[in-house]
Amino acid sequence: MDGTPLPRTFYDAPVEFVAPRLLGSVLVHTTVEGTVAVRLTEVEAYAGPRDPASHAYRGQTGRNAVMFGPPGHTYVYFTYGMHHCVNLVCGPAGTASGILLRAGEIIAGHDLAAARRPGASARDLARGPARLCKALAIARPENGLDVCDPDGPLRVLRGDPLVPTAVRSGPRVGVNGGKDTPWRFWIDGDPTVSAYRPHVPKRRPSTRP
DNA sequence: CTTCCGATATACT
DNA sequence: GTATATCGGAAGG
Image (cartoon, rainbow, N blue to C red; front, top):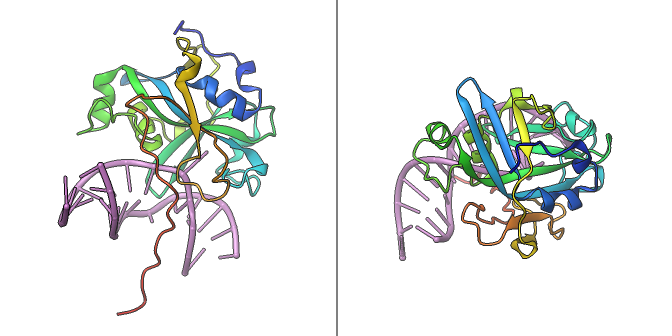
């Protein structure tokens, strides 16, 4: 990590090209409470309107609007009525592609992250997309931020190089459409990578007594 | 470790 | 009305 944000040109490429190269980089969020930094160990690529698993598959809505804007910005969404998840917008403006930040290792601000995640072990602080957001205090106000701005509150810094064999890929977690597209990327053997869960449709409440 | 399940905003039928 | 890019707690092994 050299303290310099990844340049916007880094994100202005096909999302499946950018995603594995994002592993090992560092997301840093500074608030009035302090600074927490996470080294990314697991991400997923979502390719806009052509990808049935993407939030942009059915076009623009109020929620996904920033996906249709320029790269290098956050797309934060609220799901299941209680969790936030964060993406980085990729590709030229209008591509509506993004990379979901699924998990990472807290490398600075451990005490603050732990205070935001009571009861969690160090390994679990950012092990999962909603857990990562909670540990870094990423929520609606962080939607649409420019992570390339060196003076902004939320930045993505270049990480130490990985050995090429360290990156693995497989199907994305919990998605129904596009389940054969291996666009989940993670650092092999890293304990902070989240557990894989296949998509499971919820059972309807029975009307039977 | 595992399975089950509830919480409930947002988008869609 | 139904589905979902999730999580944490309870209960079982």
